[in-house]
Length: 376
Ligand code: UD1
Image (cartoon, rainbow, N blue to C red):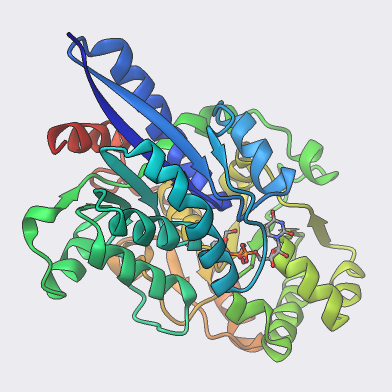
């Protein structure tokens, strides 16, 4: 008789959807192939990101089914979001009693999911384990450390992550290096993204213009008015040289409106302000941009694989492999107007240099399925 393995995967915020889609499809492929063991996969969406542009259109583009459970947590303070997720998740996990609970990345859904599951004595696997910025002001750093401390299976992206975990005294037997699952999505979509019309996305024919793509949403960059002002001033300077495409995260749109800085930005003729973009459209822009300016962890990694020079608007990164000194394509920028503008001008001089990073090969999801099945 065919045995069954039950896996519950918890997603909550935009980057999770990009990472969980390959896992979902790898499990489907496993079920078609494997005669002896069927995986029952349950998708739980906490509802941390709920707008169509932040959630539903990712489910459509990645051909993910409706989540089996939608917790409807929505926005709130960290305590509200984490607490509400735990309260709403507990009865679902109690009822399901999965063999594995999979959490992804460093968002509040991962923290709430791991803690809730562990207290129900369920086994937890953490995808994208071992990243450390060592910046305790980042809410994501708090989430990363706690989730790794309590997870049973630590699925890492690189040797940097492994070394972080080993340095914290983690038993090597809990660590499996599987590569970067977000790059599975990139490799699947890259060819299709090449055929996307940039004019359809931006209203401007950018194929022959060296434009800058920027995304900014970290609380440290957008919630502090002075910091936001420095970034906005730098972007306006940069727009003096070439078009700047800026898809706005809801947090950033709110902050720009509240601070009165939206007019400064939107008033510049070379500034192309957009709503959050679906993955394919964002990849198309990343493939063609002369420079990416971002504080997103995911974009730093995608820029490296695509070879696009990247300016990271942070003083630290939990993804050191993306930095130029480690073979990547990204540089950290001082966060003032002059520092950002200088870093972008420097990055402009670099040519595109795609990087082949070990295990960031499009097959990470399959390795995760193998690890989960092997340790069931
Ligand atoms: C979260 C993650 C961050 C990740 C980012 C990707 C945590 C701690 N942070 O940050 O690691 O890089 O997602 O986007 O989990 N909002 C909407 N519609 C939505 C979602 C959010 O309008 O669909 C607004 C809400 O008003 C909210 C604000 O955006 O207050 C921020 O959302 P939140 O989920 O709190 O954090 P993010 O900044 O998105």
